[in-house]
Image (cartoon, rainbow, N blue to C red; front, side, top):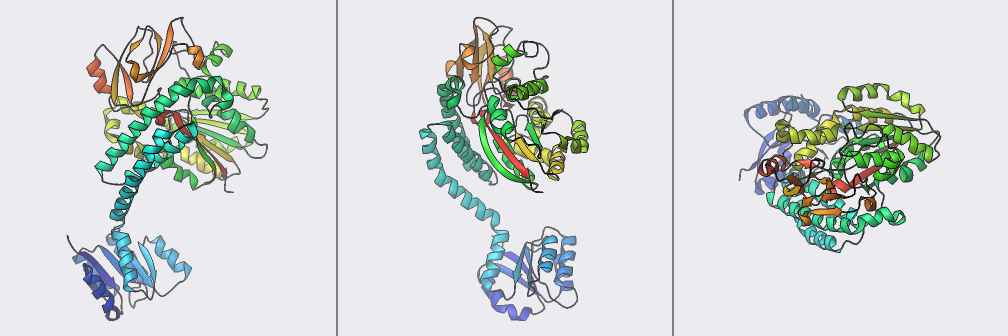
Length: 517
């Protein structure tokens, strides 16, 4: 292994010989230098792994030398060493992107720890993270087998997402594979749990977790205020892991009130789950109350064209005589326009913004080879979500909301899962095209792969004909018709789909904030 090369720049370098000996004995290659100009000449001639730079030197000062070093190579880590403890100097040095800051006198062990922290940081984090997950693996396995209620499932899912995000920083394929297997096991157990409990949640609402149709009534409406507007932002198809990576961007501007998970209804599809959010009703209740607005799967036309009407009706039923607005953003231009005009919305008590980008990203990844290449796996899919959000009009909207006294709620209607296992299904032409749930008559399927609801009314789902049933895919299964089975099994493999039962689709974030102003 190559020795680590250190350039130490100090006009009193002769006094640092004990430090040099200490570091050289531990495998470091030290190059002394007495002034800034000679240091600049040296870094042109030779590669260094780290530079230790005295702040107070004759000629070029440490800060002046730092600027020149960064102009030549911004990636070289520089540690500034100084006697000056003035805050302005520290701030200036940090602004020039130093790797660390040490106050004289420094001892050899300080220097060693600083270099290790800078250069060995990734290796140490990798080793500690892998070791910590290995210890947690058994605990998580035991927890998954002993889960008794939905709250414990939410806790287990949070832990799985935590480790997924932690391990993706590591270049350890073995650890990734172990976690993937553990997530698959978790989803298999979760599917059994949902099969056992879902219908009772709907039929005994007092014993149910927070579900799609109750989120506004229980969480948003009670907090509406005459003096503080609420902005309710629903990002379609946003998974919990995706939320966790974009959350720091929002946290910069708002004070977090609460972050929790709630349960999407089945099917975990926009037509059902999002309409349920805004109407405060389950699907067959919507069908009865809005016979002209509700559309079943086989009906032609858009299935989410009347969310504003549902919302207004919901507010009226809840006796909320308030000013409200509703905006659905499906293009970048619409987002920019809303960002420019968001100041007009502060006169309203409730402002609903539906943002469709993540859902469109999920579908585009299925249909477009370029998006598949940009997001070949879970980690890349999250990264693409982060990149979009960081540069999106939505973040600009959030920043502008933060400038006023306002309450912010961010949530979603359902998540999505990367499907891997095809399952044959046979039905007539009336069967819907969704890969994670089917509804129709005379369905033939592999029983172990599905949660079947023979009587739609039990799940508060519309019943189009007498023999209609619903089936929901479990774990990472996706439905493929018998015709051209191999072609479509390959085409849809590893695509992100929703509509069925999985932790990723059903356990979704609800987050509330208040402005810092």
